[in-house]
Length: 611
Image 1: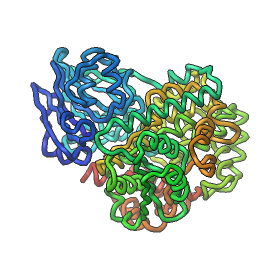
Image 2: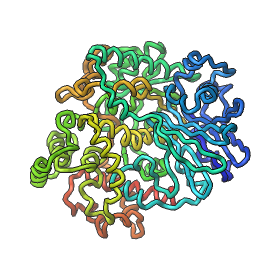
Image 3: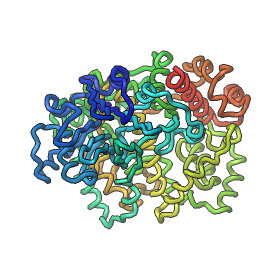
Image 4: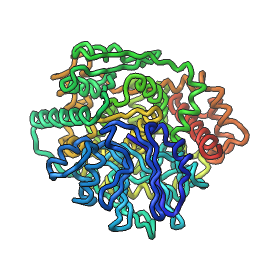
């Protein structure tokens, strides 16, 4: 795992790049120059510590690479590659010489890679299927500058704000696909590659992988066969991720079935497996459930107690690490978990992606019964009347909130159904924004492709979540949270085989009645204590309402209520004051989300942009 940066027709400031990417790669920092090209690499040494230094050269090719290729030894054997190191980086160079961009389909891993191809006088840029490893780039005026993090670009270039994208963030809660807060700065989309000429550095991304293609391939496997294949693929994924490291690989263990399954399988390949659980103060403590798995498999288990005692002094740093406004408040516990884990390990297995590919969210249940994306006028009208008379909900955990959200979904249309079902920050409160939502027309075009594709309602929302929430929010959150502490997180549930097999399985294998993640829960009966099988989805939840109204109230108010607050340019006059003083009819949970969105926005503006 590393940090990378580079440029064409622009001289990188090496000292600045070293500082900006040091946390991603503290072991070695190197700058390579040739002609009008600069390539920078900050290395976190995990595979082939002695022989895997970068930039790496082979024939006419030079590579810088952030990530891990877990099946690279298998690919060496398959294609009879003759390599001199044990590094997956060298495997990539040989594969590129052999297959070019076609090599990407063979890779099981997480990666953002850049290969300098002297035979074509161009750079080859590529990202993994899910988008676990980031790659941002500035492209303008015959210059290309790229980096693993937005802050690293911001500190090299005098960037201007893209107000249209910032409006989109306020409404959606994340940046859509390639969008960033800056003009001429983009994120190379997950599952895409681009060939960029050193003579004319224009980036034209090409899609090499799309999960939608696998949703359209309907599996004919019966349930037992699907169960056995999933078990096999999960074993393969865990084994690869344990073996592809010269350092000890541990496993994060929560009280859920995803991490429990991964841990139970990992123990079979790593007898001295180290597991750890974090116990947060308050009602979100799943440590007792995690201990059931640790005891069953006799792992070397550690329980770490974490508090939010230093949150007031840490929150600005945590949010500014992202280099963009970041809405998801679970970034806070993720930061503390990663910090604690790094005291014990450098490489950790996690359960990222399980909910998105096996249908683990409670909101998926109604979509398995009814396609809310195609609600008719009568349904929308009736739901609208019902929603108007229902009292506001203040607790997201109760059943009333569930039905309140259903009524809200059913009254919406088009892409607004999706926004309401997911982040749900300013959705439904657009009248308080100082701009129209016309920019959603471009997003609506992409949404319509999914909506008209013939998928079921469940498949549509899972497809959209993979492309949007997972890639644009959840994986961003974990990449920044872990790499802030030079910690590598590996996600077996996002393996090549599982990503290409599970989408085509029938809905009934994913949701049964009101039970989410049915296939994985059934598999879990083979491995896990009975008490864990039917536990609801929790994740790292945050007491956001409490933070907004108590611990973080002074610092939040200092930011968003100050006369010169930049976020006030995006909402109508007086709105923030009314929201803070509870003069707007809105549930406590949604109120906290809107306040947090504006706070995260303002922290980014002051700490990352204005500095």
